[in-house]
Figure (cartoon, rainbow, N blue to C red):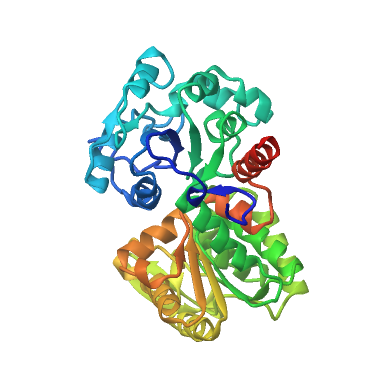
Length: 414
C-alpha cells in the first residue's frame, strides 16, 4: 500500500472488476452546433483509464448545471472520448435505472461505459452539502454501488464540491484517487511549503479568489513575492490610488462583485506587505483595436486596459527567471486577442524556461498554455479552478476527505 492518506491505483488489482470512475470532463460547448470545443479535460484522465485496463469501467460525469445553455446529454462526450482514447466508449442514456445497471452487469473486461449526465438527476444536485451518510444512502449511490467493486475519483476540478456522485460512493466502496487526482494533490502540496520560496503570479478576473490566496500565503510565510496582472492588477493599481478611467471603472462596476471592498482588501495587503506585491507600472490600452502603452502614472485612461505593459512584462520575466517555485493563476490580459497577448504569452514563456518548479492553473490559464504550445514545458498544469483556489487557501476538499475516510475505514475492517 502507498504511504499516502488515500488509496491510489497502485494499491489494487482491477482486472475483471467493475469500477465506477468519477471524472470531470465538463467541457465548453458550441451554442449553435452543440459540438465540444475543447477536449483538454478528457486527455487529462487518460492515465487513469490506462491504469484501469482490463477492468469493466463505468464512467460517471457531469456537464454544466440545470438552466444553462450547455446543460446537455453526454452522448457527444462519449464520441469525443472514444476519439481521444482510440477505444470504443459506449454511451448509456440513463444513470441508475434497470437499463443502466443491466448494461453494467453485461459488461466484459475491457469495456468502457459512459453513463448519463449525473446532474440530470435531482439527488446529485438536491443533496449537495448534506452529510456523507445521507449522500451515500441516495437511490443513485445505493443502486450503482450494488453493481460495482471499486470507486475511483479523478475529478480534481470538482474536489471542492460535496455531492453524491463525488463523495457518496466513498462511504460504500473502497475509494481510490485516480492518477490525475493523485498528481494534483501531490504536486500542489509542494507549493504550500512554509519557506517563503514561492513566486505567485495572479491575474485574470477572479479578484476575490486571488486576494484570498494572497492573504493565506502571506500569513503562512509561503510567498517570496506576488506579481499581479489582469483585473487583479487593476484592483491593486486602484489600491495604490490610481483612477483607472471611465471604461475601466465601468468594467469593474459591472463584472467584479464588491470591487470597492476588494480595493480596500488590496490596500490593506499593500500596507502590510509592501515589499511582497508587484503591481503593474505600465499598461496597454485597447485604442479601437490598436495597442497603446502608457505608464500607470498617466492614468486615468479613456480606453480600456487590455494587458500589462512592456516594462512590467520585462520586470516580471526577470523575477520569474530567479524564482525557486512558481505558481500562475489567471492571464495578464485579454490574450484571446492577438494584439493583447504580449504580457500573458511572455510571462508564460518565461515560466516555461525558468529553472524553478512551475505550476499553472485555472481554465483560462490552461487555455493560454495550450495556445502557446507550452504544456510540456510546465512542470504541472492544474485542471482545477475552484478546487485549486480552495486547496491553495488551506481549505479541506470534501472529495479528498472522503478518500481519506474510505482508506481509514477499509484498513480498520481488514
